[in-house]
Amino acid sequence: MKKIFITLLIISGYSYAQEYQITSVPVIQYSVDRYTNEIYYKNYITGDIYKTNSTGTYHIISEFPSVPQFSNNSHTAAFMENHNLYLHNFDEDTSYFLANLPYFFTKLLFSPSDDKIIDGGGDWVPIVYYSFEDSSVHNAGNAIYIDVIDWLNDSMLVYITLGGVDIRTLNINNLNENLVVPSAYLVNLRGLATNDNIGAFAYSWEYNSTENTFINLYYPQTGLDTTIYNFIEQGPHPGFYIDIFIRDLIWERNSNKLGFIGVVPTVPLSYIFAFDYNNSVPYLYTEPFINGGGIKYDLQWLNTDTTTYIDWTDYGLLFGLDVTIPVSVKENSNKVEDNLDIKVYPNPFNNATSIHINVPATGDLTIELFNCLGENIGKKRYDYIVAGSFNFDWNEIKNTKDLPAGIYFIRTHFSNREYSSQKTVKLVYLK
Image (tube, rainbow, N blue to C red):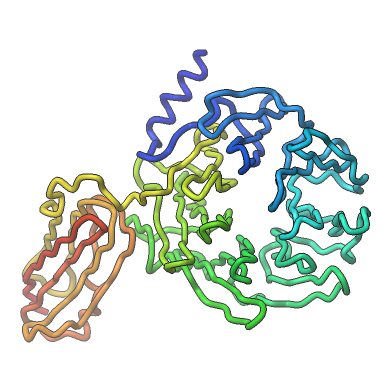
C-alpha cells in the first residue's frame, strides 16, 4: 500500500488535464479489445496476464497465457502458448489451435481482411505467416531483418529494414521485394503505420538529428511521398534546439487519425500528437516541457477519442489520454492574452540584441521584423510553442549584416483556438 501511495505522488507531477491512470503496476505489453473497451496487459513483475476496463476500475486475472492480439473485423484474437498459435472466438468463448510456429511471437498482426497473421515485433528471424485460407504456416522468403513491419494489404507487407536504413515492400504471393523509400545520407527511418482506408502508409524519419524530424505519407499506387508533419515548423518548441525523434505511429482507422509520440532521447521528455488526415492538421495533446513530460511508449487507440500508452518515467504504468481537446484549447481564457509580453535588450544596440517574449499559453507564435517604411523584412514562426518565457536572438529573424542602421519594429502575434494577441516594439539599430 505504501508503494502505491508513493507512485501516485510521483504521477501527480506529470499529469495533464485529460490524462488518467489505468494500472498501479508496471506493464510490459498490452492490447485493446475495441468490442468491449477492455485492456489486456502483462504484469511486468509477475508475468501474469490481467484484464481491466478502460478506466482501470477492476483488474482480474485473464484466461490467456499471453497477451491476446485482436483482429480487425470480428471479435476474435490470436495468442501464443509456447510455440503454439491459437485463435479465440469471444462470441463463442472458445479457443482453437491453429499451428505450431518456429518462433514465439509476442506481437501478432492480422492482415486487413483477417485472412493471415504475421509476427509484428521485428526480429532477426525469417518472416513467416499463418494463412486461414489453407490453414498452414508459410515462409515469406529468406531472413529479412526488420525494425518495423505492417500489412499494406492482404498480400503485401511493408517494413523498415534493420537499423532504419530503408523501407521495402514484399509480395508474399511471388516473394517480389521492392525498395519504396531508399536510404539517404544521415537519414534514419523509425516509425511505420499503414492505413488501408486511404491506401497509404505513414513513416517517421530524422535528418542529421537536431530537430530535423518529419512524418511522411507514402502512396504506393502513385509513388506520391509527401511530408505531413515537420517538427521545426509545427513544434512543440521549448524555445531552444533539441534532438528529437518520433515513434509509435498508429492509425485510428474509424477517424483516420494518426497518433504518434515525439521523444527527446537525452532527457525524460516526450509528447503525444495526433494528425487528422481529414483536415490535414496535427494536434498536440500533452505538454512536453512542463514538469518533465516523461518517456511514453507503446501508443494505442482505445477508441476515437482516447489513446493509451505506457509511461516509463512512472515505472511503466499504463495511462489513458482523452484526445478530444488539444492542450492549446483553454476552457476559460480569463484575458490571458494581456499577458503576452515582449522586451528587447539592449535597445538601442549595435551588432546584437536579445528578444525576450513571455508566451501566455500553448499556441502559435509569429515574430516579424519591419523597417521604418513598414516593409516586412524577416519572419519566424513557431507552431505549438508552450507557455513560458523565451529568448530569441535577433539574428534568428534577420541577419544584421544585411541591414543598415536605423529604426525597426518587432511585432509578435500569438494565437490559439481561444484567443489571439499582438504586440509591437520599436528597435534602434546603431551598427
